[in-house]
Length: 349
Image 1 (cartoon, rainbow, N blue to C red):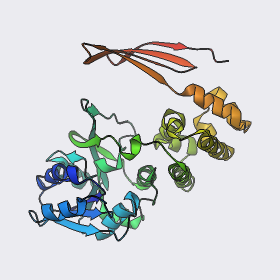
Image 2 (image 1 turned 90 degrees about the horizontal axis):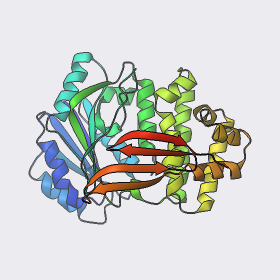
Image 3 (image 1 turned 45 degrees about the vertical axis):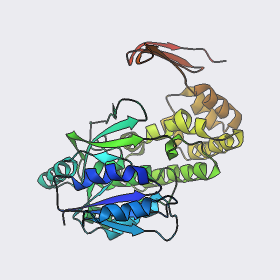
Image 4 (image 1 turned 30 degrees about the horizontal axis):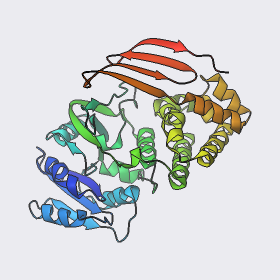
């Protein structure tokens, strides 16, 4: 068998038909579609069994209890019989020739990981093509679901997802990037379609469980770095850790429920900086660099709060966005038709 596609399912009954149809319509027909229900509380399992009757390539499994997406994807890898493995979330879909083109590239170049493009579909908005870095060995690989992996490569290096509710994908991607023996190739013109729907995990406010798992994920990412033979400042940049740490105040900080969790986040960041991890990445922000070095929790909190962006948008006829203003206590940026036309620094007291 050429390809196993792992589809973890939890309370997605209304999305299953679109996603699974995109898989059964693939031009590559030598596939198995491994759907694992993670103890859904809606009729996802019943819907899966109903759809599976129409195509024998769909195999339905169920977890005895809710285990989370990391465990479920790992179970899919263990069940897979294909030469290659791919992952799709059930509320997403793929182009009909997506897997055929990726595997064709992988076989012609004898490389264990090949990825395609990603189109994000925000709820009620036009699709957005997610940008990739296409320079060097590692830049072309982001978004674990957009790739195919040689199954022997995953098994040989024991590459799997940690059982976390946040950040499991970043740990997996880091393990892949560090262990792949060749540059990860990027196939243009075929896309994975990522559906950002209301109420998904990425849109939720975070509690202690999400924060704890996020901190574990960050430590796992840097443990992978430290155990590799790559030069750390280079590998951190190449493997995308700079973005991951910027997410501390671009995303995570604003998601947390209340000041207690924000303080816990800062304390975790200071611990990382003591190991000369985060400080490397924040060296271009002097305020944050020195506050971390001084282990000044209140100062770091103040800087992170001041770094949170406020956004105003302006539309023509309430439909077409022509201008956007983003500002925080340090910077102000004005965009016209999506292009930054003015950047200014704001003095922060």
